[in-house]
Image (cartoon, rainbow, N blue to C red; front, side):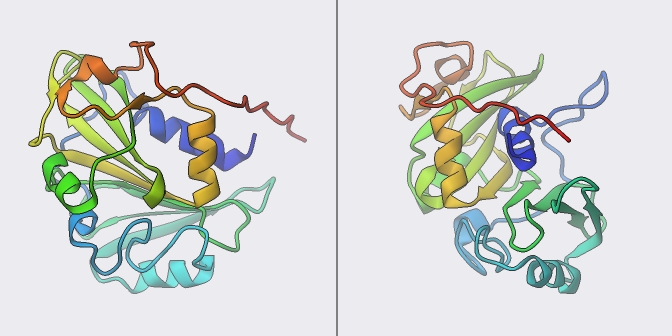
Length: 226
């Protein structure tokens, strides 16, 4: 399996916590960004004038470094491949965000953890309804509902107050993942997903609810390293 697909899979399931007490998903110190609803300076899957699958890595890195609202841009190179990742955050904020390139030449994906400034209702008013949905429990009092927009090559992460809460118009967006078109297609082809059926209980869209409308068409086989 491609190394970056492992990254996508982890992010798409949930914001995996590395400690016993997972951090709060609703965090005002994360990136403040409402471009999902304003389409400024560009519309999804473009973010900050960077489009996965189109923007050259060096150009994208320059954009991040020149952006006065972003700080602490740090890059890491994979010793065993051409993959490279840049991590960054909003000025004065917490670490939040990653930009990744599989081959080191063109941006493959952008992942942002967001401050809870935008609601799902505002998202749907601006971008329409998602095509597919899947929910993942994060902790006892926190859960994520992944909203997939295939035409926008975008996955949006909505917060619910645990697995017994409802997804509503007022549910807050706490993250977004932008990717290349063929990678969104691959994500759908390898995932169990529910079709969007409006607002309602988290359990309707939970990964544990096995009444899926979409099931994997193909199975990815991990590629041996070395």
